[in-house]
Figure 1 (cartoon, rainbow, N blue to C red):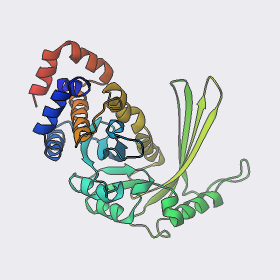
Figure 2 (spheres, rainbow, N blue to C red; figure 1 turned 180 degrees about the horizontal axis):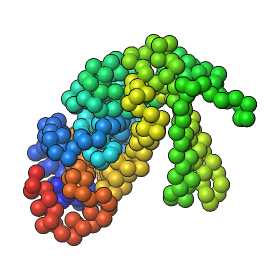
Figure 3 (spheres, rainbow, N blue to C red; figure 1 turned 135 degrees about the horizontal axis):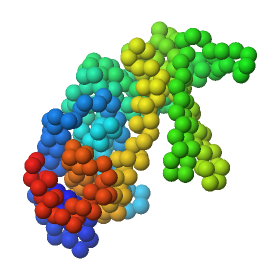
Figure 4 (tube, helix red, strand yellow; figure 1 turned 45 degrees about the vertical axis):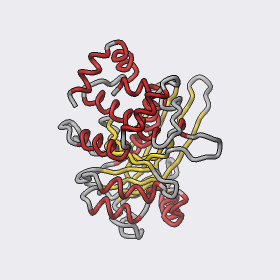
Length: 318
Protein backbone atom coordinates (compact mmCIF):
# COMPACT_ATOMS: atom_id res chain seq x y z
CA UNK A 1 0.00 0.00 0.00
CA UNK A 2 2.79 2.43 0.82
CA UNK A 3 4.39 1.48 -2.50
CA UNK A 4 1.15 2.27 -4.34
CA UNK A 5 1.05 5.65 -2.65
CA UNK A 6 4.55 6.43 -3.88
CA UNK A 7 3.71 5.41 -7.47
CA UNK A 8 0.64 7.64 -7.63
CA UNK A 9 2.66 10.61 -6.40
CA UNK A 10 5.28 10.34 -9.15
CA UNK A 11 4.39 12.47 -12.21
CA UNK A 12 6.20 10.17 -14.68
CA UNK A 13 4.12 7.18 -13.61
CA UNK A 14 0.93 8.19 -15.44
CA UNK A 15 0.50 4.64 -16.73
CA UNK A 16 0.49 3.24 -13.22
CA UNK A 17 -1.99 5.89 -12.10
CA UNK A 18 -4.29 5.02 -15.01
CA UNK A 19 -4.12 1.32 -14.15
CA UNK A 20 -4.89 2.14 -10.53
CA UNK A 21 -7.96 4.14 -11.52
CA UNK A 22 -9.22 1.46 -13.92
CA UNK A 23 -8.90 -1.31 -11.34
CA UNK A 24 -10.33 0.35 -8.24
CA UNK A 25 -13.91 1.35 -7.46
CA UNK A 26 -13.59 4.14 -4.91
CA UNK A 27 -16.78 3.55 -2.93
CA UNK A 28 -16.14 -0.18 -2.58
CA UNK A 29 -12.56 0.49 -1.52
CA UNK A 30 -13.76 2.96 1.12
CA UNK A 31 -16.24 0.43 2.50
CA UNK A 32 -13.53 -2.24 2.75
CA UNK A 33 -11.12 0.16 4.45
CA UNK A 34 -13.74 1.34 6.92
CA UNK A 35 -14.83 -2.21 7.71
CA UNK A 36 -11.24 -3.36 8.26
CA UNK A 37 -10.31 -0.50 10.60
CA UNK A 38 -13.60 -0.61 12.51
CA UNK A 39 -13.18 -4.31 13.22
CA UNK A 40 -9.72 -4.00 14.73
CA UNK A 41 -9.71 -4.92 18.41
CA UNK A 42 -7.70 -1.82 19.33
CA UNK A 43 -10.07 0.58 17.58
CA UNK A 44 -12.87 2.40 19.33
CA UNK A 45 -11.63 2.18 22.89
CA UNK A 46 -11.66 5.97 23.14
CA UNK A 47 -14.85 7.90 22.88
CA UNK A 48 -14.36 11.03 20.75
CA UNK A 49 -15.21 11.16 17.03
CA UNK A 50 -14.40 14.33 15.06
CA UNK A 51 -16.31 14.98 11.83
CA UNK A 52 -14.60 17.32 9.39
CA UNK A 53 -14.46 18.30 5.75
CA UNK A 54 -11.39 18.61 3.54
CA UNK A 55 -10.72 19.44 -0.11
CA UNK A 56 -7.90 17.49 -1.76
CA UNK A 57 -5.94 20.43 -3.20
CA UNK A 58 -4.28 18.38 -5.93
CA UNK A 59 -7.66 17.60 -7.48
CA UNK A 60 -8.41 21.23 -8.39
CA UNK A 61 -7.69 21.37 -12.13
CA UNK A 62 -8.33 25.07 -12.74
CA UNK A 63 -8.71 28.17 -10.61
CA UNK A 64 -12.28 28.62 -9.46
CA UNK A 65 -13.20 24.97 -9.88
CA UNK A 66 -14.18 22.71 -7.02
CA UNK A 67 -11.87 19.80 -6.35
CA UNK A 68 -12.65 16.55 -4.59
CA UNK A 69 -14.21 17.44 -1.25
CA UNK A 70 -14.29 14.75 1.43
CA UNK A 71 -16.13 14.36 4.71
CA UNK A 72 -14.60 12.08 7.32
CA UNK A 73 -15.18 10.67 10.78
CA UNK A 74 -11.89 10.59 12.69
CA UNK A 75 -10.77 9.12 16.02
CA UNK A 76 -8.19 11.71 17.19
CA UNK A 77 -7.01 9.75 20.22
CA UNK A 78 -6.23 6.73 18.06
CA UNK A 79 -5.19 8.40 14.80
CA UNK A 80 -7.76 6.47 12.75
CA UNK A 81 -10.12 7.66 10.00
CA UNK A 82 -13.20 5.48 10.49
CA UNK A 83 -14.95 6.57 7.29
CA UNK A 84 -14.60 9.16 4.55
CA UNK A 85 -16.94 9.92 1.66
CA UNK A 86 -16.63 12.16 -1.39
CA UNK A 87 -19.28 14.82 -1.94
CA UNK A 88 -20.99 15.22 -5.30
CA UNK A 89 -21.16 18.69 -6.83
CA UNK A 90 -24.73 19.21 -5.54
CA UNK A 91 -24.01 18.00 -1.99
CA UNK A 92 -22.64 19.71 1.09
CA UNK A 93 -21.24 18.54 4.41
CA UNK A 94 -24.47 19.16 6.31
CA UNK A 95 -26.44 16.80 4.08
CA UNK A 96 -23.74 14.10 4.02
CA UNK A 97 -22.85 14.06 7.74
CA UNK A 98 -25.99 12.10 8.75
CA UNK A 99 -25.12 9.39 6.21
CA UNK A 100 -21.54 9.07 7.48
CA UNK A 101 -22.59 8.83 11.13
CA UNK A 102 -25.44 6.42 10.38
CA UNK A 103 -22.90 3.75 9.44
CA UNK A 104 -20.94 4.08 12.70
CA UNK A 105 -21.57 2.67 16.16
CA UNK A 106 -22.14 5.81 18.20
CA UNK A 107 -22.97 4.13 21.49
CA UNK A 108 -21.05 5.84 24.31
CA UNK A 109 -19.27 8.03 21.76
CA UNK A 110 -18.99 11.82 21.66
CA UNK A 111 -19.26 13.47 18.23
CA UNK A 112 -17.74 16.92 17.81
CA UNK A 113 -17.64 19.16 14.77
CA UNK A 114 -17.33 22.76 13.67
CA UNK A 115 -20.25 25.18 13.80
CA UNK A 116 -21.71 24.08 10.46
CA UNK A 117 -22.71 20.76 12.04
CA UNK A 118 -24.66 22.49 14.80
CA UNK A 119 -27.98 21.25 13.43
CA UNK A 120 -31.05 20.03 15.29
CA UNK A 121 -31.63 16.94 13.18
CA UNK A 122 -28.02 15.79 13.48
CA UNK A 123 -28.12 16.34 17.26
CA UNK A 124 -31.24 14.18 17.53
CA UNK A 125 -29.70 11.46 15.34
CA UNK A 126 -26.56 11.20 17.48
CA UNK A 127 -28.39 11.03 20.81
CA UNK A 128 -30.94 8.55 19.42
CA UNK A 129 -28.02 6.32 18.37
CA UNK A 130 -26.69 6.27 21.94
CA UNK A 131 -24.05 8.99 21.61
CA UNK A 132 -23.56 12.60 22.61
CA UNK A 133 -22.66 15.76 20.71
CA UNK A 134 -20.38 18.72 21.35
CA UNK A 135 -21.01 21.55 18.89
CA UNK A 136 -19.45 24.96 18.44
CA UNK A 137 -21.96 27.76 17.96
CA UNK A 138 -21.44 30.62 15.52
CA UNK A 139 -23.57 32.88 13.32
CA UNK A 140 -25.33 30.05 11.50
CA UNK A 141 -27.36 29.66 14.73
CA UNK A 142 -27.79 33.33 15.58
CA UNK A 143 -30.48 33.00 18.25
CA UNK A 144 -28.61 30.24 20.04
CA UNK A 145 -25.37 32.21 19.93
CA UNK A 146 -27.16 35.28 21.31
CA UNK A 147 -28.51 33.25 24.23
CA UNK A 148 -25.02 31.97 25.07
CA UNK A 149 -23.40 35.40 24.78
CA UNK A 150 -25.97 37.00 27.06
CA UNK A 151 -25.64 34.24 29.65
CA UNK A 152 -21.89 34.64 30.00
CA UNK A 153 -21.92 38.43 29.72
CA UNK A 154 -24.51 38.76 32.46
CA UNK A 155 -22.58 36.49 34.81
CA UNK A 156 -19.04 37.67 34.11
CA UNK A 157 -17.46 38.61 37.44
CA UNK A 158 -15.78 41.91 38.22
CA UNK A 159 -12.32 41.10 39.60
CA UNK A 160 -12.24 41.54 43.36
CA UNK A 161 -15.94 42.44 43.62
CA UNK A 162 -18.02 39.46 42.64
CA UNK A 163 -18.00 35.76 41.91
CA UNK A 164 -19.99 33.66 39.49
CA UNK A 165 -23.06 31.66 40.50
CA UNK A 166 -22.34 28.20 41.87
CA UNK A 167 -23.51 26.63 38.60
CA UNK A 168 -20.53 27.98 36.65
CA UNK A 169 -17.39 25.84 36.54
CA UNK A 170 -13.95 26.39 34.98
CA UNK A 171 -10.93 24.64 33.60
CA UNK A 172 -7.67 26.03 32.23
CA UNK A 173 -4.63 24.72 30.35
CA UNK A 174 -1.28 26.31 29.48
CA UNK A 175 1.03 24.73 26.89
CA UNK A 176 4.42 25.88 25.66
CA UNK A 177 5.57 24.31 22.39
CA UNK A 178 6.83 25.20 18.93
CA UNK A 179 7.78 28.69 20.09
CA UNK A 180 4.29 29.49 21.29
CA UNK A 181 2.61 29.88 24.66
CA UNK A 182 -0.98 28.72 24.39
CA UNK A 183 -3.49 29.39 27.14
CA UNK A 184 -7.05 28.10 27.00
CA UNK A 185 -9.81 28.31 29.54
CA UNK A 186 -13.39 27.17 29.48
CA UNK A 187 -16.43 28.30 31.47
CA UNK A 188 -19.32 25.83 31.62
CA UNK A 189 -22.93 26.25 32.75
CA UNK A 190 -26.12 24.19 32.95
CA UNK A 191 -28.38 27.21 33.40
CA UNK A 192 -29.75 27.13 29.83
CA UNK A 193 -30.69 23.44 29.93
CA UNK A 194 -34.40 24.13 30.47
CA UNK A 195 -34.43 27.52 28.75
CA UNK A 196 -32.97 27.04 25.27
CA UNK A 197 -35.06 25.03 22.80
CA UNK A 198 -32.35 22.70 21.54
CA UNK A 199 -32.60 18.87 21.46
CA UNK A 200 -31.09 17.12 24.50
CA UNK A 201 -29.12 20.19 25.59
CA UNK A 202 -27.40 19.73 28.97
CA UNK A 203 -24.54 22.24 29.16
CA UNK A 204 -23.23 25.30 27.37
CA UNK A 205 -19.72 26.73 27.41
CA UNK A 206 -17.54 29.67 26.52
CA UNK A 207 -13.98 28.90 25.49
CA UNK A 208 -11.22 31.51 25.28
CA UNK A 209 -7.86 30.91 23.66
CA UNK A 210 -4.74 33.12 23.80
CA UNK A 211 -1.70 32.16 21.74
CA UNK A 212 1.49 34.19 22.26
CA UNK A 213 4.43 34.02 19.88
CA UNK A 214 7.31 33.88 22.35
CA UNK A 215 9.80 35.41 19.91
CA UNK A 216 7.71 38.33 18.66
CA UNK A 217 5.30 38.76 21.55
CA UNK A 218 2.38 38.85 19.13
CA UNK A 219 -0.86 37.58 20.67
CA UNK A 220 -3.69 35.84 18.85
CA UNK A 221 -7.00 35.67 20.66
CA UNK A 222 -10.03 33.53 19.93
CA UNK A 223 -13.37 33.18 21.67
CA UNK A 224 -15.99 30.54 20.85
CA UNK A 225 -19.23 29.28 22.35
CA UNK A 226 -20.56 25.76 22.39
CA UNK A 227 -23.25 23.33 23.51
CA UNK A 228 -23.31 19.68 24.49
CA UNK A 229 -25.73 16.90 25.36
CA UNK A 230 -23.33 15.55 28.01
CA UNK A 231 -24.48 16.17 31.55
CA UNK A 232 -22.32 17.70 34.28
CA UNK A 233 -22.14 14.29 35.97
CA UNK A 234 -20.52 12.75 32.88
CA UNK A 235 -18.37 15.64 31.69
CA UNK A 236 -16.69 18.26 33.83
CA UNK A 237 -15.09 21.39 32.29
CA UNK A 238 -11.68 19.74 32.06
CA UNK A 239 -13.09 16.94 29.90
CA UNK A 240 -15.05 19.33 27.67
CA UNK A 241 -11.93 21.42 27.11
CA UNK A 242 -10.04 18.27 26.12
CA UNK A 243 -12.71 17.38 23.55
CA UNK A 244 -12.73 20.84 21.95
CA UNK A 245 -8.93 20.83 21.74
CA UNK A 246 -9.12 17.57 19.78
CA UNK A 247 -11.29 19.25 17.16
CA UNK A 248 -8.97 22.26 17.00
CA UNK A 249 -5.89 20.06 16.70
CA UNK A 250 -6.99 18.12 13.64
CA UNK A 251 -5.12 20.46 11.27
CA UNK A 252 -1.80 19.78 12.99
CA UNK A 253 -2.31 16.05 13.25
CA UNK A 254 -4.32 14.37 10.50
CA UNK A 255 -4.20 17.08 7.81
CA UNK A 256 -0.46 17.69 8.22
CA UNK A 257 0.32 14.00 8.02
CA UNK A 258 -1.69 13.56 4.85
CA UNK A 259 -0.85 16.84 3.13
CA UNK A 260 2.84 17.10 3.99
CA UNK A 261 4.22 13.78 5.24
CA UNK A 262 2.35 11.66 2.68
CA UNK A 263 2.55 14.49 0.10
CA UNK A 264 -1.17 14.60 -0.64
CA UNK A 265 -0.98 18.38 -1.02
CA UNK A 266 1.58 18.13 -3.85
CA UNK A 267 -0.10 15.26 -5.69
CA UNK A 268 -1.89 16.10 -8.93
CA UNK A 269 -4.86 13.78 -9.35
CA UNK A 270 -7.57 15.58 -11.31
CA UNK A 271 -9.08 12.65 -13.20
CA UNK A 272 -12.25 10.89 -12.06
CA UNK A 273 -12.06 9.83 -8.39
CA UNK A 274 -8.27 9.60 -8.29
CA UNK A 275 -8.02 12.07 -5.41
CA UNK A 276 -10.60 10.16 -3.40
CA UNK A 277 -8.75 6.89 -3.96
CA UNK A 278 -5.49 8.51 -2.91
CA UNK A 279 -7.10 9.79 0.28
CA UNK A 280 -8.43 6.31 1.08
CA UNK A 281 -4.96 4.83 0.60
CA UNK A 282 -3.41 7.49 2.83
CA UNK A 283 -6.04 6.90 5.52
CA UNK A 284 -5.30 3.19 5.43
CA UNK A 285 -1.56 3.82 5.66
CA UNK A 286 -2.05 6.04 8.71
CA UNK A 287 -4.39 3.47 10.22
CA UNK A 288 -1.93 0.61 9.74
CA UNK A 289 0.87 2.65 11.26
CA UNK A 290 -1.27 3.62 14.26
CA UNK A 291 -2.44 0.07 14.86
CA UNK A 292 1.14 -1.17 14.79
CA UNK A 293 2.40 1.47 17.20
CA UNK A 294 4.14 3.89 14.82
CA UNK A 295 3.63 7.43 16.14
CA UNK A 296 6.13 9.30 13.95
CA UNK A 297 4.72 8.95 10.44
CA UNK A 298 7.64 10.69 8.71
CA UNK A 299 10.14 8.33 10.36
CA UNK A 300 7.98 5.32 9.53
CA UNK A 301 7.71 6.35 5.89
CA UNK A 302 11.49 6.68 5.57
CA UNK A 303 11.97 3.28 7.17
CA UNK A 304 9.50 1.48 4.90
CA UNK A 305 10.86 3.26 1.82
CA UNK A 306 14.24 1.75 2.64
CA UNK A 307 12.80 -1.63 3.66
CA UNK A 308 10.08 -2.59 1.17
CA UNK A 309 9.87 -6.18 2.39
CA UNK A 310 8.95 -4.96 5.85
CA UNK A 311 6.29 -2.77 4.23
CA UNK A 312 4.94 -5.81 2.42
CA UNK A 313 4.93 -7.79 5.66
CA UNK A 314 2.94 -5.00 7.30
CA UNK A 315 0.22 -4.85 4.66
CA UNK A 316 0.14 -8.62 4.02
CA UNK A 317 -1.34 -9.09 7.48
CA UNK A 318 -4.48 -7.26 6.36
